[in-house]
Image (cartoon, rainbow, N blue to C red; front, side, top):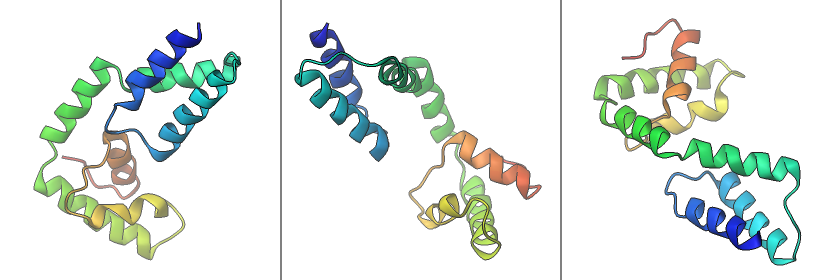
Length: 122
């Protein structure tokens, strides 16, 4: 059982887009399993959620989103970022990031601020 869990975690750990939290969570699971403990229901559910997030279908959708992320979309994102930086408290944690040209926001994080400012995502 522990070997199967570790194999699942190892496969996920290779994902380039893991958040810091996800990476830390997976590391903690490895330590947990190495101590001979089984996963709790909540740990297993969270692991399954992370696996679902990085399924082949989800990765294909993310790649399609990245390929379709236009300079106009980035420009709109920067405009929204400046709006939210100057009008806190909403989306402040997201607003600081778009000013980097290399950033491509996740689709859901792009659409929500667009809706709040009445801007249409491209």
